[in-house]
Image 1 (tube, rainbow, N blue to C red):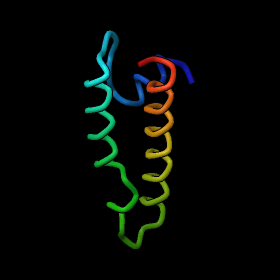
Image 2 (cartoon, helix red, strand yellow; image 1 turned 30 degrees about the vertical axis):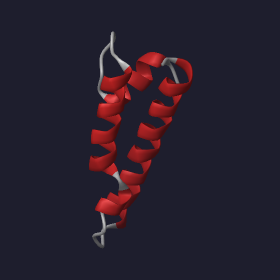
Image 3 (spheres, one colour; image 1 turned 90 degrees about the horizontal axis):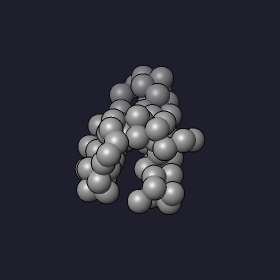
Length: 67
């Protein structure tokens, strides 16, 4: 994953601050957390799981290498 990809996934544009990255992460985590998708539609929950995995990877990458 590149810095640009991670920023794109989190929906922020450079230059950005740690505060903006954290705020975007929290907003996306609330929206895509798999526990929010407790319907009988397993496909929705699976999609949320994939999205949340990408969001977590992007945030962790930025925290490790960028911030």
